[in-house]
Length: 95
View 1 (cartoon, one colour):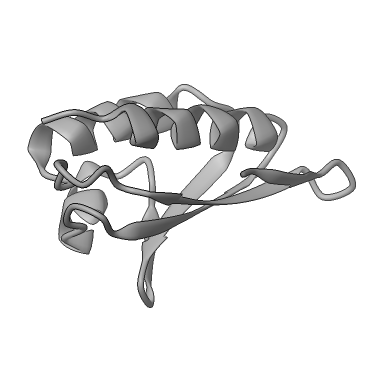
View 2 (cartoon, rainbow, N blue to C red):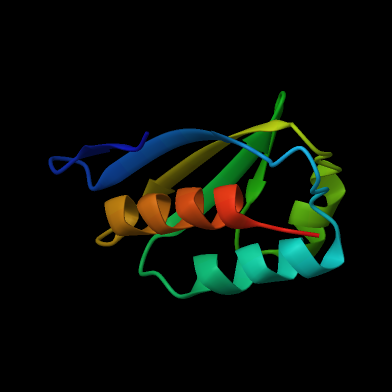
């Protein structure tokens, strides 16, 4: 569930990769393309590593495997919208 703060234009969410999806080339590219569509800085974290959600190489370097919990964070005018959309995208990813 996404949380937003209009005072800082920031939003956070925690979402789990589906049990049949690794965040490899195709799903990662889909995620990055979606993140790039928002006027917000967006980051994604898996474990202790947090990376720029608009960088395909960074997303791939996370090595997120099926069932991994991802923490999404955004700042900017469209932060809440970005986090909501990216959360929905992650839950709908398919191999």
